[in-house]
Length: 356
Image (cartoon, rainbow, N blue to C red; front, side, top):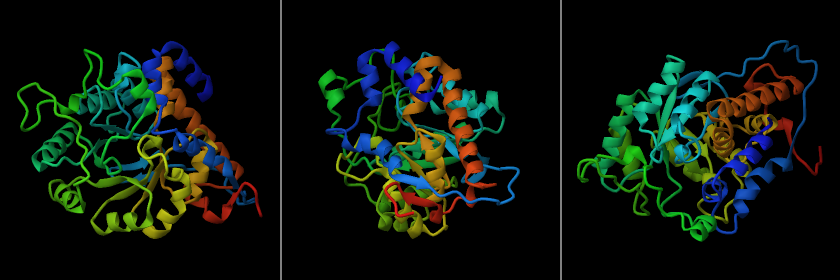
């Protein structure tokens, strides 16, 4: 099945409330739609006769040397979509050579997620996504869990100072997980009774000082996710971030921001190669991966397509999504005359309406 077919099958079999939770975005969902539509505004100008009979699409990322250029972006509550939840996603990502970014809102604890990945591939790279908590001891406890589980990098989401207003969830009354499901990484944290859950943190009072405190508490590389403004990318590098993820939270936070790919060039230009720049939001084809890498991304993250694959066919569905994107990218790279990711350069990208 194609990615579209996996989506359609997932929609048929999922409870509509659960489908809407994954599919929906903030506000009128303008940004949600534009994330995908934006890639149609770009075209690739291939190079020819470059002598690249073989291709190597691997990339060195923090805590993930030789990774594939397509990552599994952090997404919530996989067990709502399939009984195996994040375990199935972890096995599939490991088998396809993709970094998995698991996070606070996982319905399987990070230790079990990493174990599932490494039962498949012994050195599979798993990153842990977290949000900074107003109480530093909670943030530090989460970091220790990720370290003890064997995660190789941390990803700090910074674009959620408050919760996005998601019309579908509000209409459906989806404000809490059904009985039997929980954000397991938020269990047994400092200040909560044994076995109790702590709310996933959101606070507009957080600042770069809190990020500095996180860096001081771990030796793991830390990426900053949710950057759209080049000035914030520069601040992230100045404060010691190991990478920057250009993202608008999949259109689930602010409905008046640009598409993620439209912000990529400016952020990559500001960072100027000092740390890797990644992108998530709207990637649906291998050619989208090629456009993002040509515009300065080292790799891309994919969220919703992975969830549709999981809902449609469990681990096998996730593997199909990742394989289709990987193979589509490799094919596009060959058509553009490239032998490696860095052969895709900004001069090979034009706007769809010209001039070329």
